[in-house]
Length: 576
Image (cartoon, rainbow, N blue to C red):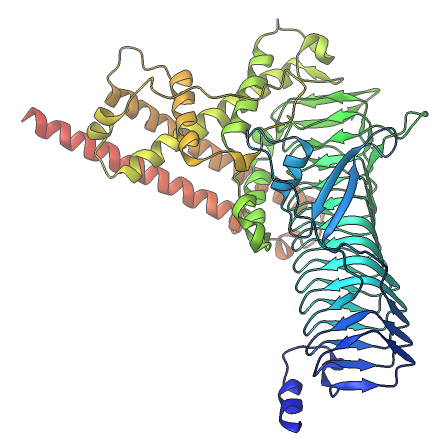
């Protein structure tokens, strides 16, 4: 009736087609369909075996049909090697990266995932309530949850779309699962893939046989047979083939070729990318390569990485003549601003709310610190030399070479990172306890921290997964590191804690200064090179990342001063 028609016109949907009155108009053929009230079915050529829900729109499409015995919401994806093997995953429309990692055998938890619920066979398209499908020539076997949309696509088949997922503008999509608010847009082609919540493909992108994790953005390039973890960006023309990158958080630069997976015999090679890896401009990665124990490392522009396994975290890998040069811990020493900005960026850009419970891990955490400890030990256990070449000289540098200066720089960088991590832990524990330092010392059980199983970079294995750690093990780990880095010796626990807090202040102030200097170097260089640079760029003094680090430093310095002052007062009273 007229009242219902008016209420439907007052919709919050922005597409102009929602202003059409409900009804069935000028369709050439409709066969074996269920069209619910207040749906809009306009100007379609062939429409068969289709359910159209309340308030949904199906308009100006060509052939809308459904195959036989379709299982919506399930998909088999083969990642890694394109031929001669491969890793077969069975994924569902609501999977998380936790599920994918378990299916890969990466999880260290004893419990195995339960088998996937088997979807019933279906012989009908589902166009859910208030969803939108228009101006698409070919649709076959599609499932649209409420408010999903397909607009001006070229062809969509065997595809499941959850709420607010969208496919738009000349895209070809088949055998694909799209989670909430994911999208495929503008001349992109996606086949046999899962896009998790807030993952976006396009414009001008090709994705095949891959899993894109939450908050992943890929455009203008190709992704084949890969797993791309959360918060990863590949915004430029680049190639990613056979890359297992479940922890993501990285970046693929323009012209990067992370896909030399063919030996001349078979395209049967693969690579494992560590968390936060940055593939620079025009890099060439020759498979197999394993950087899973080199998280947050940078492969510099124009670098060719030959097959190897590198286990030096936060490193810079740069082309030098015929061989790559590695500077262990370079990001920690010379670009700490990068890590601070990344922490802010990951927190700000995490829009996938259904995955939020596991994607918010911090960069410096127990498993990353363990990798730093092992890398530092490898650097310390060699006899000094001018140049070190490959793993034969230093375990963990792969097929690269390293200078003595680089070795010493790496030891210093890892030591500062390890100690600052543990010292921040003791400060937080004291602050949150609400106890005086003497009371905290009396309750503290030194040498009580339990040992824990650690994935060693010396063996070929999967790197640890951050969501398999908890707050209790985090503090236990920090306490263990403290006792190794700063042995208590004959000192009282209170004196030991005072020494630790004083050391924390020095390291935190040095860290804050290095973050500032890192950004200020760019300011100085830019001002000397580009006219008007200072007027069009945010300076280090006003940079929000630098300010947040200075605020954190100020809080720690003030907190330590209060603790030490209260301790001095308590000790004076006890003597009186």
